[in-house]
Image (cartoon, rainbow, N blue to C red; front, side, top):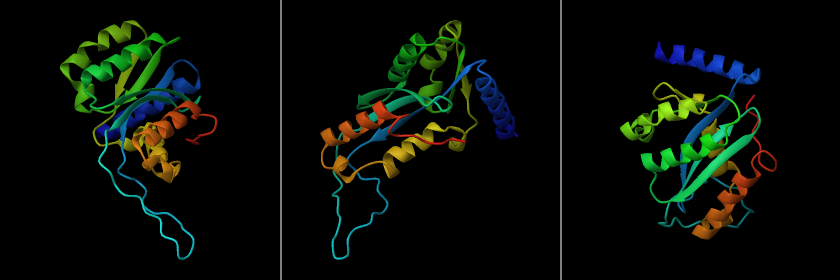
Length: 186
């Protein structure tokens, strides 16, 4: 029942965004490291492809995605993401708003902490409204699809050769999303 009511609310928000009454962004975080996420690959007959899994730092990307305009606002951090990091990214995002904006996000602990929740009133006064998805519903958050494409479809084997290569790959996709890298969400 909660899922159905939240889905209906989200559909209404999508309609408002289509009418340009509001801007609508989807928010989430994803981590990238040298542990390959490639489930399979093609190779020439008699040739073996292999990528050794390596322990590495985690490159975390926090992103706001507007699927209607292919607008992506992202922030990268090496290391741990906590509520303070998320708050800082939201503070930066709020600075760029030009009209009322709704951000759709999940109920991760870093999104529902006391510190994070204490900022909601301040952000609302600047035109940002948060819409929390029902639990266990990543299918309602299209930015999850972006992370999937980055990890499973667009990535080259060379990205796994070093942490520097991985960072360069992530930078390239984030900088070229909406032009070289596109997803049709319709």
